[in-house]
Image (cartoon, rainbow, N blue to C red; front, side):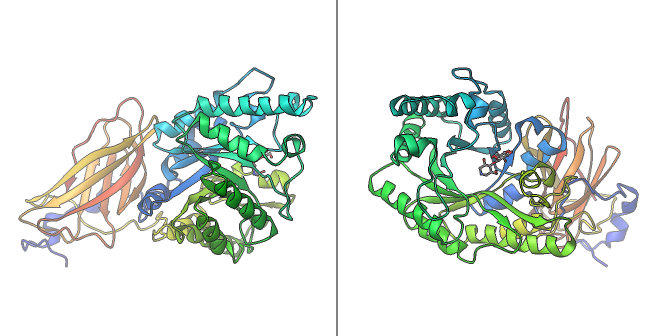
Length: 463
Ligand code: 9MR
């Protein structure tokens, strides 16, 4: 039998524990042991991001986007056809929504993308421009868009997909009319418009060492030599199940050694449908090896997934018969790939949803041990809270904390404790590894919950 240090048997103090909150949390993304991915990533000094669809930023989609990621990339909202559908007429609403959401959730934004061969408005691609006119249009575009978000974006994918598979420069609107110098010009103009943003060149099929990444490498080296403001290289990483390039980490490292940052910018791992547990396990291993390759290299700043849920992925629209490429399924349930990302970021990979932890009882709080509740981060629909148990002149070998959510708040996730909510009553018990609160020591656990209207701080009782 476990006892409190001051000698009383646990059962005499903690009675009736099982009557409160019998329902274990099984909310989407409930994880008893690991904190959200963004906290794991932050502890490693890395970013974990997702592409988002601006129009979907509400409800469960928004909850997960805000809770799990510390960086957002607008999937489409900042592309030229989105922001300037007809010449001189701008529409920033979708892009603004992503940036506002990110700021409300203490997230970075990766701007995507300024110069690309695709998703340009037809007035631009169909225009019969002289090179000088086109240059002016591009300069104005960069100046306007980067300038609009000056100081608010962490980084920009300035130039996207400039290379052919053989490492030569792609023939497109830009290179055909402006020559290869458009890349240096675009970076220089973007830097002038927001000197604080990290400027990237971004491409696909450049994850391993190959002819295409060699071409990109040579370009980045010469841009650096010429003093062009380039800060980073984006490896998109649209991968196929079981085909993570074996040279991924080596490739990240060689770019880092040029003196630029590297980001995995659009990670997904597609598989032939239907998915099954074997494929999902394989996919988890693939996600883990990509994230691990990034965490292994200091200048790899982080990993962004191209949509966090299978229902928000471009894959099924483009690759017939393929899908299931992201870490959450179409019902916003975490897949094995989610746990794999958590593990690669230093977590246990325990997604909870079952036994949430210890079995401390209810009853009288032990003298000398107290609980302090605080809201550490709050956004329009949710918040992150934490409870710190501290003991002085006493100690605990297991614990349970209770409170009442008085304003309709609802727990969605907890870490470092097993929590449950029944009605307004919340009950959290220690995890297997943090039942002990020593004399003079403390233990903290955290949780996410929804709120609306008001979010008063409840009183927490121990025992
Ligand atoms: O995710 C984007 C999808 O919604 C668009 O239909 C598609 C159009 O090309 O672009 C997708 O994002 C692309 C990204 O901007 C650049 N790299 C490849 C991505 C997948 O196509």
